[in-house]
Length: 237
Image 1 (spheres, rainbow, N blue to C red):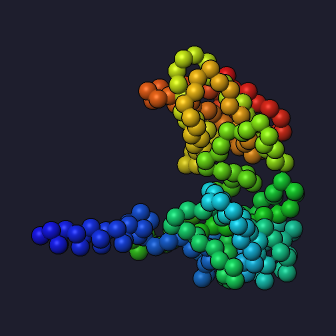
Image 2 (tube, one colour; image 1 turned 45 degrees about the vertical axis):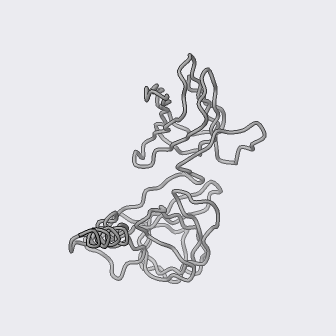
Image 3 (cartoon, rainbow, N blue to C red; image 1 turned 60 degrees about the vertical axis):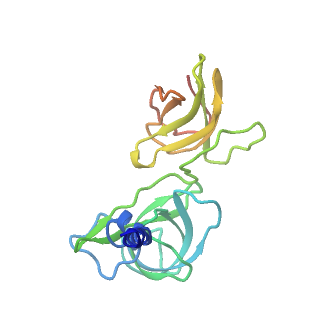
């Protein structure tokens, strides 16, 4: 019986990824144009030419060469262009690799430099059904686990500084930065402190930002929501 339980446990560990994904991994490339068609800006054959290195983030950025345009409502994108690509970095995919080639369906956005950027749709099989997932477009530089700014830190272009103040004797050890994309709330942890002001670099384009300071006793102090739509300093007290 012990052997059987151990074997079953190992089996579950080995297949935890599949259970967590509830089906196949998401795929970036489509074999055919789905019907009904999505509200996309571009359908094209691309080849992934670069994936940016760096620490794990919510979004993976890179670039792709547009081999052939099938349908497009955005005149900025042309065959032969090298264009930026942004994909959500989820454990169930889609997974990018240099040299990957196929047909994508995408929204065309604009990055901080004013250049077009592709936000592809993805699809996966779930219990025999093909599910198409629209892209979640997050601002350039978005991080799921931001760190409080230090004295000598530089503020990147396209970011604003959000100051979060909390008074009193309550010890605060983490902050949740919520926004309009609720699935991708930002979480910041730090040593316990009270009567403090913390600074965070938040990318422009975050909508309905709210800050919830969480104390050791799990009491929550929620601040008013506002949009981070221009450079500068925002203060939440």
